[in-house]
Image (tube, rainbow, N blue to C red; front, side, top):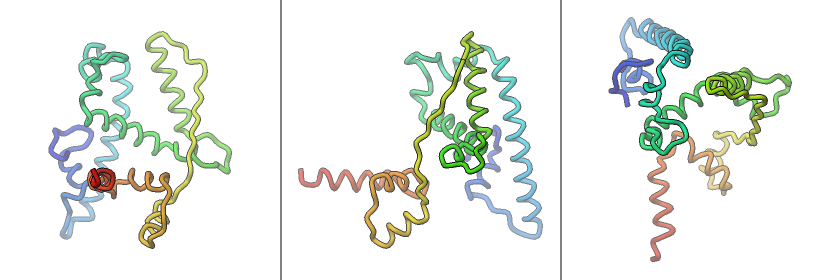
Length: 191
Protein backbone atom coordinates (compact mmCIF):
# COMPACT_ATOMS: atom_id res chain seq x y z
CA UNK A 1 0.00 0.00 0.00
CA UNK A 2 2.74 2.49 0.85
CA UNK A 3 5.12 1.40 -1.94
CA UNK A 4 3.12 2.60 -4.96
CA UNK A 5 4.40 5.33 -7.26
CA UNK A 6 3.96 8.93 -6.16
CA UNK A 7 0.52 10.34 -6.81
CA UNK A 8 -1.55 12.69 -4.72
CA UNK A 9 0.50 11.27 -1.85
CA UNK A 10 4.17 10.46 -2.10
CA UNK A 11 5.54 7.18 -0.79
CA UNK A 12 6.90 9.09 2.21
CA UNK A 13 3.49 10.69 2.83
CA UNK A 14 1.88 7.24 2.88
CA UNK A 15 4.52 5.89 5.23
CA UNK A 16 4.08 8.86 7.60
CA UNK A 17 0.25 8.77 7.55
CA UNK A 18 0.16 5.01 8.19
CA UNK A 19 2.66 5.27 11.05
CA UNK A 20 5.52 3.48 9.30
CA UNK A 21 7.65 6.64 9.44
CA UNK A 22 8.25 8.93 12.40
CA UNK A 23 10.00 12.25 12.69
CA UNK A 24 12.30 12.57 15.66
CA UNK A 25 14.94 15.01 16.77
CA UNK A 26 15.14 18.74 17.08
CA UNK A 27 13.47 19.47 13.70
CA UNK A 28 10.67 16.87 14.02
CA UNK A 29 7.94 19.44 14.72
CA UNK A 30 8.88 21.47 11.64
CA UNK A 31 9.13 18.32 9.50
CA UNK A 32 5.63 17.17 10.57
CA UNK A 33 4.24 20.66 9.89
CA UNK A 34 5.86 20.70 6.43
CA UNK A 35 4.59 17.19 5.62
CA UNK A 36 1.01 18.13 6.60
CA UNK A 37 1.19 21.36 4.59
CA UNK A 38 2.55 19.57 1.51
CA UNK A 39 -0.20 16.94 1.73
CA UNK A 40 -2.93 19.62 2.02
CA UNK A 41 -1.54 21.47 -1.00
CA UNK A 42 -1.32 18.34 -3.16
CA UNK A 43 -4.83 17.20 -2.17
CA UNK A 44 -6.21 20.66 -2.96
CA UNK A 45 -4.43 20.81 -6.32
CA UNK A 46 -5.45 17.23 -7.16
CA UNK A 47 -9.09 18.10 -6.53
CA UNK A 48 -8.77 21.07 -8.88
CA UNK A 49 -7.28 18.74 -11.51
CA UNK A 50 -10.52 16.73 -11.58
CA UNK A 51 -12.16 19.61 -13.49
CA UNK A 52 -9.54 19.15 -16.21
CA UNK A 53 -9.90 15.37 -16.18
CA UNK A 54 -13.70 15.57 -16.33
CA UNK A 55 -13.70 17.93 -19.29
CA UNK A 56 -10.63 16.88 -21.26
CA UNK A 57 -9.56 13.28 -20.61
CA UNK A 58 -10.30 11.36 -23.78
CA UNK A 59 -13.08 8.78 -23.65
CA UNK A 60 -10.80 5.88 -24.59
CA UNK A 61 -8.44 6.81 -21.74
CA UNK A 62 -11.36 6.90 -19.28
CA UNK A 63 -12.49 3.49 -20.55
CA UNK A 64 -8.99 2.06 -20.04
CA UNK A 65 -9.20 3.20 -16.44
CA UNK A 66 -12.85 2.49 -15.59
CA UNK A 67 -14.16 0.38 -18.47
CA UNK A 68 -17.37 1.11 -20.34
CA UNK A 69 -20.14 2.04 -17.89
CA UNK A 70 -22.99 -0.44 -17.77
CA UNK A 71 -21.03 -3.38 -19.20
CA UNK A 72 -19.51 -6.45 -17.60
CA UNK A 73 -16.08 -5.34 -18.80
CA UNK A 74 -15.56 -2.76 -16.10
CA UNK A 75 -12.08 -3.02 -14.55
CA UNK A 76 -13.66 -1.98 -11.26
CA UNK A 77 -15.40 -5.38 -11.12
CA UNK A 78 -12.06 -7.20 -11.23
CA UNK A 79 -9.91 -4.74 -9.29
CA UNK A 80 -11.02 -4.66 -5.65
CA UNK A 81 -8.23 -2.22 -4.77
CA UNK A 82 -9.50 0.27 -7.39
CA UNK A 83 -13.10 -0.22 -6.26
CA UNK A 84 -12.11 0.39 -2.64
CA UNK A 85 -10.12 3.46 -3.68
CA UNK A 86 -13.14 4.93 -5.47
CA UNK A 87 -15.37 4.09 -2.50
CA UNK A 88 -12.93 5.72 -0.08
CA UNK A 89 -12.44 8.78 -2.32
CA UNK A 90 -16.19 9.36 -2.34
CA UNK A 91 -16.39 8.75 1.41
CA UNK A 92 -13.46 11.13 2.02
CA UNK A 93 -15.03 13.90 -0.04
CA UNK A 94 -18.56 13.47 1.29
CA UNK A 95 -17.48 13.08 4.91
CA UNK A 96 -15.29 16.17 4.80
CA UNK A 97 -18.02 18.27 3.18
CA UNK A 98 -20.62 17.44 5.82
CA UNK A 99 -22.60 14.39 4.68
CA UNK A 100 -22.75 13.16 8.30
CA UNK A 101 -24.88 16.14 9.26
CA UNK A 102 -27.52 14.89 6.80
CA UNK A 103 -27.60 11.63 8.73
CA UNK A 104 -28.57 13.28 12.01
CA UNK A 105 -31.06 15.92 13.02
CA UNK A 106 -29.55 19.28 12.17
CA UNK A 107 -30.71 21.96 14.57
CA UNK A 108 -29.65 24.69 12.15
CA UNK A 109 -31.95 23.39 9.45
CA UNK A 110 -29.38 24.03 6.74
CA UNK A 111 -28.34 21.57 4.06
CA UNK A 112 -24.64 20.68 4.14
CA UNK A 113 -22.38 21.48 1.23
CA UNK A 114 -22.16 17.72 0.58
CA UNK A 115 -25.84 17.70 -0.45
CA UNK A 116 -25.24 20.50 -2.97
CA UNK A 117 -22.01 18.92 -4.24
CA UNK A 118 -23.61 15.51 -4.76
CA UNK A 119 -26.62 17.00 -6.52
CA UNK A 120 -24.51 19.19 -8.78
CA UNK A 121 -22.09 16.33 -9.55
CA UNK A 122 -25.00 14.14 -10.69
CA UNK A 123 -26.38 16.98 -12.82
CA UNK A 124 -22.97 17.65 -14.37
CA UNK A 125 -22.39 13.96 -15.11
CA UNK A 126 -25.83 13.77 -16.72
CA UNK A 127 -25.19 16.81 -18.91
CA UNK A 128 -22.00 15.19 -20.22
CA UNK A 129 -24.19 12.46 -21.78
CA UNK A 130 -27.06 14.78 -22.72
CA UNK A 131 -29.25 13.85 -19.76
CA UNK A 132 -31.14 16.56 -17.90
CA UNK A 133 -31.22 15.70 -14.20
CA UNK A 134 -34.36 17.45 -13.06
CA UNK A 135 -34.41 16.36 -9.45
CA UNK A 136 -32.14 14.55 -7.03
CA UNK A 137 -33.50 13.14 -3.79
CA UNK A 138 -31.25 11.58 -1.24
CA UNK A 139 -32.79 9.66 1.60
CA UNK A 140 -30.55 8.42 4.37
CA UNK A 141 -31.77 6.26 7.23
CA UNK A 142 -29.15 6.40 9.96
CA UNK A 143 -28.89 5.85 13.68
CA UNK A 144 -26.21 7.41 15.83
CA UNK A 145 -24.41 4.58 17.63
CA UNK A 146 -21.40 5.93 19.50
CA UNK A 147 -18.57 3.46 19.05
CA UNK A 148 -16.97 4.25 22.43
CA UNK A 149 -20.04 3.19 24.40
CA UNK A 150 -20.35 0.03 22.28
CA UNK A 151 -16.78 -0.90 23.16
CA UNK A 152 -17.55 -0.29 26.85
CA UNK A 153 -20.64 -2.53 26.61
CA UNK A 154 -18.66 -5.23 24.83
CA UNK A 155 -15.88 -5.11 27.41
CA UNK A 156 -18.45 -5.26 30.25
CA UNK A 157 -19.96 -8.42 28.75
CA UNK A 158 -23.24 -6.77 27.76
CA UNK A 159 -25.08 -8.26 24.79
CA UNK A 160 -24.92 -6.20 21.59
CA UNK A 161 -27.59 -6.10 18.89
CA UNK A 162 -26.79 -7.22 15.33
CA UNK A 163 -26.82 -3.55 14.28
CA UNK A 164 -24.32 -2.66 16.99
CA UNK A 165 -22.10 -5.60 16.04
CA UNK A 166 -22.21 -4.50 12.41
CA UNK A 167 -21.02 -1.02 13.39
CA UNK A 168 -18.07 -2.56 15.20
CA UNK A 169 -17.33 -4.89 12.27
CA UNK A 170 -17.12 -1.91 9.94
CA UNK A 171 -14.53 -0.20 12.10
CA UNK A 172 -10.85 -0.48 11.27
CA UNK A 173 -10.16 -1.99 14.70
CA UNK A 174 -11.71 -5.35 13.82
CA UNK A 175 -9.95 -8.10 11.88
CA UNK A 176 -12.89 -9.42 9.85
CA UNK A 177 -10.98 -12.56 8.85
CA UNK A 178 -10.73 -13.59 12.51
CA UNK A 179 -14.44 -12.87 13.04
CA UNK A 180 -15.32 -14.93 9.96
CA UNK A 181 -13.24 -17.82 11.25
CA UNK A 182 -15.08 -17.71 14.60
CA UNK A 183 -18.46 -17.68 12.83
CA UNK A 184 -17.37 -20.49 10.51
CA UNK A 185 -16.24 -22.58 13.49
CA UNK A 186 -19.45 -21.91 15.39
CA UNK A 187 -21.71 -22.77 12.45
CA UNK A 188 -19.86 -25.73 10.99
CA UNK A 189 -18.01 -27.41 13.87
CA UNK A 190 -20.84 -29.90 14.48
CA UNK A 191 -20.89 -31.11 10.89
